[in-house]
Length: 403
Image (cartoon, rainbow, N blue to C red; front, side, top):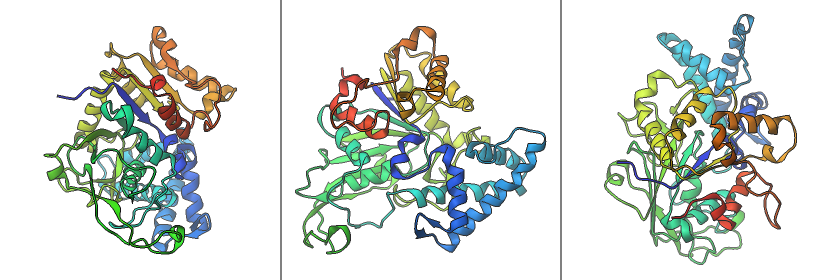
């Protein structure tokens, strides 16, 4: 039986933008830029990465032939993935093209992401100042400890996994540290769930880079991860459901027959990434994630949406949300965080209209588009992920239901 979560937080692409990952309408341009320049910013990329990105861009250019009869935007990632997935359906000779683009998407995310995978025992700066570390600090302390939300994301990246992992690495005298002895991210299919437990393992801090003012040999609290089999039999102090509806960089395309990755923070060479049209070849393997996400939304009191504009082309997600909230008699509020909602203009009005049209007229007054109407001292730019975290800490009752 699915546990009830009073609050559900739904993350769109805008929630990963602070980590350096391009927004959906910028993603293809970033992929082309990295391939053409051979570097991210001023940092060169490997020859292997560049070859993957170049091949993906050739495939994207080849799809322009569709424009002679059908409307197709070859700079829209959703269009590209959807078209390639249909090409591959029943035609195995086209599958490598789809796989090449999937691999290029994964590498673009990894090259862009500010939070890199580092081996076990890596050194993390003791000052976790990112908004993502602040998010975990809020969630694992205070009143949220006994009222944890469920998390749903449309993103493939590992930003939340890695920052949670980092949050559990800290010096003993760090001002920001976990207030729980263990924490688990539950993907719902049982494999590769992320379990972290405090230990007091010693590791040396080298005197270089950002940690040049820290003496080596200080004691830090270290996390360990159990594998999927052991994790399924263990309950952590803070179990947080984390439903990744479109796949994840640490999920194998062969799952659940094979274990995804050794660590939840490790991206795989062939990750499971679902196209927006929901590739039927993968549907049976990911159904449990969608069903579990649907269940928690149907019993939520408040739903908080961060960084998702509900584009009119995303018909599948519109029906998912309608199916989720339609039977939910407990639902009180939908709260939307997006910077566009604080800007006057057609884009703002169009987004508000899309949300209102997705839900019933009598419920439209309960969709909150500006959680903070007037800026406060120290408040980040309104509508951003940073603003969401700030509100979660400063005015949690304005966002969440506390029984």
